Image 1 (cartoon, rainbow, N blue to C red):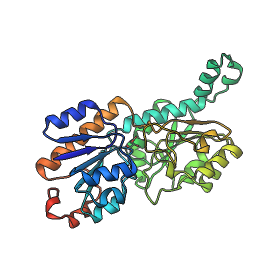
Image 2: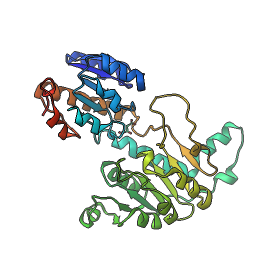
Image 3: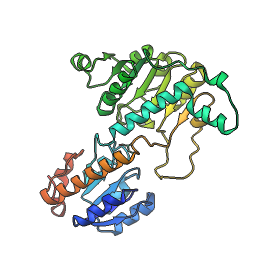
Length: 333
Ligand code: MLT
């Protein structure tokens, strides 16, 4: 079985795939047209991607039967186009959740203590205890969480360890689940915003969550509250956030941006990072620890093996693709 890996992947995992008998083509730099051309001309059965976008054009002339998203979210893949062509899409849910929750806590602490600004001034040879001694502290504050999935739950544990009270909104949250988690359930993101001193976003990117944090949400937030987004840029209306930063002194810690590049390095000119006020941005690195990347790689290999050896696709997100399979592609169930 031929596997095209079109994103950075750990060497150890690539080696393991080869040992298991997969024919591996490793081209981590492939993007856009170059990716489409390579996929069309190669006879790859499986495409493995992380940040690389997989569009209808990528899939249309391919021999692919499976696309694996080496991560949790799969909003970078045109799942509808894959389903229409009988191509399965699967992902690696939960494997990098701890890493994302760790970064979200890091951003929260960074916002409260303005760590990045401290560092910058030290590097400019300035001592400014007078200014940076002004911090609020997290203990006893209320953290609002949007989305109580795996990462949201890990965030609850971490917030509690810091002595924070947690309120949350999530589509799947019930009073019973909230009670078991020891948190207070709110009926809407705006209800969370109204009482929280800090908010952390952990919802998946779907048509329903696009722009979830918009004008109404930021209008409901307390003045000067902290806002952390390690989920997806599209969940936030960036214009509304910019306005909230300017007009309400909201401090934002963002790991994800609506228009972020899919390449690993390059230029990035989104003006939200330059908006006056406290914006601490990171480079969509929530899932990027050694631990998380090895866990993702192991899950990718598990999916590959089960697909090849047992004709099953673990974590398939488009079971409907089965109805469109052509005989050459009916290896999965
Ligand atoms: C995810 O969807 O799991 C992460 O955003 C992965 C990544 O950083 O590429």
